[in-house]
Amino acid sequence: MEFVAHRDELDFIAHLASAPAESAVVFVGEAGIGKSQLLETAQRESGVQAVLLHANPAEAAWPLSGFSRVFASIDDSRAVEFGGRFTLRSTEPQFMFAAARDLLSLLRGLALPPLLVLIDDIDKMDVESQTLLGFMAGRLAGTGLRFVASAERLADDSPLAGFQQREVHRLSIAESVQLALADLGPGTDPGTLQIIAHQADGNPLVMMEAARALSHEQTLGREPLVLPCRPSETIKNAAAYRLAGLSDQRRRMLETIALGAGSHVSALTRAGNEEINALEDIFYSVSPSPMASTCTSSSRSCARTCIGT
Figure 1 (tube, helix red, strand yellow):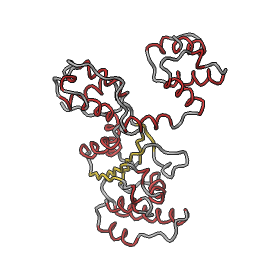
Figure 2 (cartoon, helix red, strand yellow):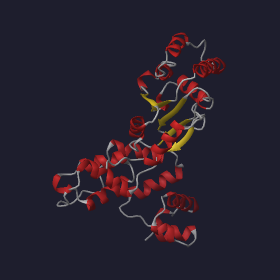
Figure 3 (cartoon, rainbow, N blue to C red):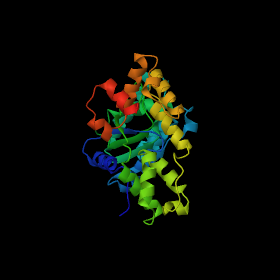
Figure 4 (cartoon, rainbow, N blue to C red):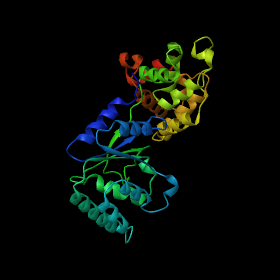
């Protein structure tokens, strides 16, 4: 059986598409996590009519360019006629929301069959289109439309705040190995893939890039691996995504750890409590590990014990 990543997310989309109530959701996640692949698979597996649109960042300077593409995906002559007359007198919010209300009224009158509209990289659309779609997201009842979009991340003040937000989860080690085996074939050494899977840390694209960079002898387990994996653009982008929300203290602490051949907690926390707090924040932000799950000491002593040995 072909391995399909993100089965939980696909099941959620299938439920959303077939549910009697219309809704809108946006999946967020780092570069390479599989957002585009998720939407492509969802379109193939959809039990209702589904269209897949890719935002074009080159058109982001043109107001309503993204929304026009979304509207054109509605295959109905009456909607097409309305689309030809759909204009904004101004990009002021009151005019944009009035135009969106007119469109929603039209769609409700059309009594369209369910339509799943999949929008990849919606955060790269022009702001006006995002504003209209975000306004419509919470008012889709009776339109027949189900919006499922992908984005890297949404700010708190994003015009897409009307979308329900879900995170695309990282693959487990076993899922990462399955993904690579499906591509490289059953003869690949499972131990080699286990090592690469730990390096990829659940990112499917990083996993596949590393697996495909192996020599034939390495895939068979007959040659040693060069670790850590060389940082590709995907790894750099994923790292930037994960570091984006860190405080300056935590970022400086990570830089100190990364640049040292070996770091002891006494050196890392030499300046005082601020550095100790940053170190503890980093430790507890890491995914649960056997060491973390069995540690019962105080937070400060835990950081000293687990990182300073």
